[in-house]
Image 1 (spheres, rainbow, N blue to C red):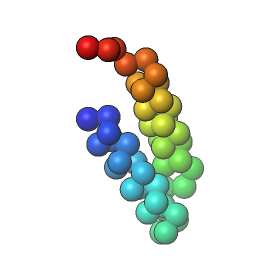
Image 2: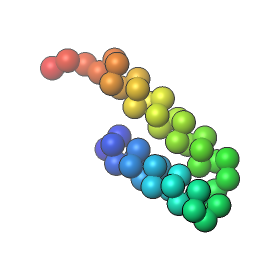
Image 3: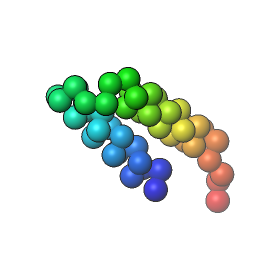
Image 4: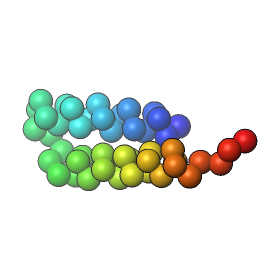
Length: 47
């Protein structure tokens, strides 16, 4: 589910560059998604 959210945010971020939609808000969400992704990659539980 985390990967789905990240992909959606990246697509919206790229559309924001093309159509100038969303402004700083989508960049803020993208940064949050990247921080969560890095956190999960570093501190995920090993099964």
